[in-house]
Length: 471
Image 1: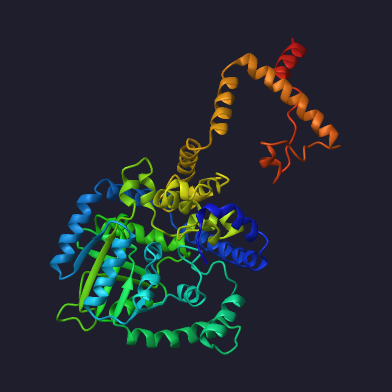
Image 2 (image 1 turned 180 degrees about the horizontal axis):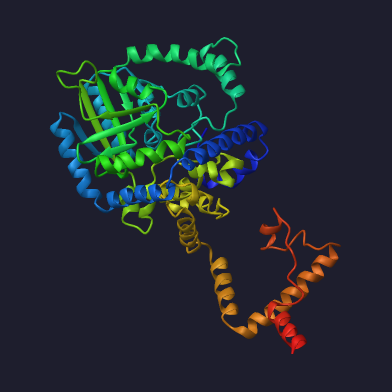
């Protein structure tokens, strides 16, 4: 299945009529939202903690170049290798080169959205390397040959029944409706993969500059097995994940699980400083950190810098009424929901994801849910502005005419009267209090909703009449 962000409208129309998807989204987003509200509500001053987390990320972005250099120095001193990737192709090539150096045939990977972003799995498959996803949701997506639909919960778009059928069909699981039995079967299959792997891969939730540490949080234990059992560990992480200190991390790690899964703390917090030291019983013999740009420095140098403060918790997806109804695959991108509607056009080019900034009601639920208080609605409006500047001449002429009319009181009053008379007449023709269909080019509105007629009396007229009546 190919992802295409410019086909959002068509994909959303299909999604709205997919009953299995609607069931899965109702269960998934409802549960996630409820748990987040409870977990954040336990905090004595949740707003202050959010602002502290926001401050940590914004300070990190302010000093981003220096922090990345500090991270490289610290990690290299511990025996790790730091590689820089300007784009997805360079990142893939780094991984392939590492695989050749260590004669890798089999590999395992914990959940990483950035490796989805660079389309790593197809490149490894083409090179003859068997890479297995070990996060249960990502593993299900992999054997189904589809894509994850959520930043945190990859199979948000699937019901338990759909997952059961995939596992029966793809990995010969005996029939069961018990989730615990499904996970036990998957665990048995995956355990052998860890033991056979020549290389383990991960992403990174945080990079701590002061000690050169990569932090990965998870609930299944797969991240620790993927990175600790194979002799080689490769972490691919976006450059925006760096934070200055452990104190900053201590703030953010309180916010991430509460916002993502409604937990006070994730089950596992894995910290990597490089390859295993001589006195350590486990851990990789070789450690590589690939720092990925892939368009992030362009965002960093723009008015959308704040988008890089995202800690990838997925709370804005769960809270968004659009995502709740159409799911993540409709966005045609690794990053979906409100933050995806910002990040995807900025990373892929606005012309390649033009509908996404408009896939929002601008209700503000995303900003309210964001643990670092990113102003998502304002950035969506800014992207709409940018996209409108590239629209066809007809649109530009229409907007200039609109601006001219609204800046001249007489034209505004006459236009309002004409609009009221015409819309009231159209409503009478249809025999109701609303207009079912407008002529082109306004039919885009009435294709999906009714159009109420303009009021018979303007506010100014009403106010003047009220003053005259009371005088």
